[in-house]
Amino acid sequence: MKFIDEANIQVHAGKGGDGSASFRREKYIPKGGPDGGDGGRGGSIWALADRNINTLVDYRFARIHKARNGEAGRGSDCNGKGAEDILLRMPVGTLVTDALTGAVLADLTHHQQKTLLARGGSGGLGNLHFKSSINRTPRQFTRGEPGESRELHLELKVLADVGLLGYPNAGKSTFIRAVSAARPKVADYPFTTLHPNLGVVRVDDARSFVIADIPGLIEGAAEGAGLGHQFLRHLARTHLLLHIVDAAPLDESVDLQAQALALVTELRKYDESLYQKPRWIVLNKIDMLEESQRAAVRALFSPVLAAEEPQESPRIFEISALTGQGCRELSYAIMQFIEAWRISHPFSASDPAAAAQASSPLPSVDLEGTSAAYSQTGNPPEDEAP
Image (cartoon, rainbow, N blue to C red):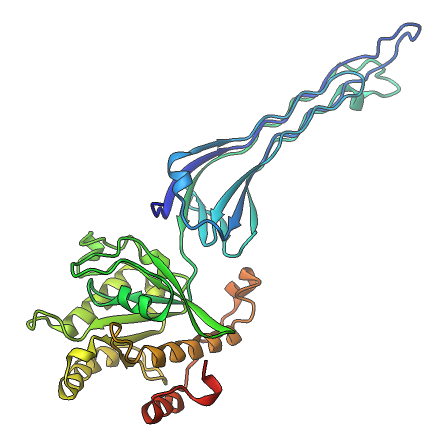
């Protein structure tokens, strides 16, 4: 199925049915009085988050969604039938905005979340409501109200705990294949990844996090180079970014430090809040380097780290996504960070509105003990063993 993460649609709720101006007319019952019923309610249109859907492809081709009108009232005190509502199922993580005003109508962040997009019109009143002691033959009735109509912009932002950043062919897809069951395409040419891929990383039976791999970002993305900023929206909901760096590029003239700084610049051009997220540098393909070469590569990134806000936790990791070297240690470090984040944001999963109001600082993670345990034994600490 083709991955579509944006769509524009129109929603038109149904009009309410008109009220009826009718009088009771039966044999042997003169002047039976008014008996006009009310009109039925017009159908409304709702959005429902469904975790079994992962793309907006259905709305790329079905752009207009109309609900039925309510039935008009009839005599003999018969009210019109209300129209059925329309339920639009969308992927979890979909942001629905008004295409004309830009107002956010719905942010579908959890399964089965339901939000009203367009309200159906109320039915009109029949003449039965207007009778009184001085108005025994009322001919008044009201028309049904029109339903709401809107032009909507749908934008899918995938839900993940960790996002991967990096130049094309840095090894992001290979890394997500190494630590999860996801199987994105891997090849020896740039821009192999053309849409986001999600993988669930399990460090043991009860501890896991979700990682998102997006197409590579290159210098000039703000001007549309490569795939531009098209997929950066999918990192907006992450709590941690991993900047994957190819530590052993085939072209020895490549300036790794300049590449890293250029990517950070592109990130800041797109969204300041995304730039402010915690970001760890992951040096990939270290299996192709000698120890002295690794030290030289690590030294290149000191200015990159010094240019940013200092953090207590170390932020440079060395891995080989192809052989799996260092991936286990990195996964445990990420899990420790995510667990600390979840503790400091207890309402984020169950109550998105409460989470949005939370202003606790991002947690700092002490990885010294974990790193030492790995370096001495090559295995995770006993209390973290899967």
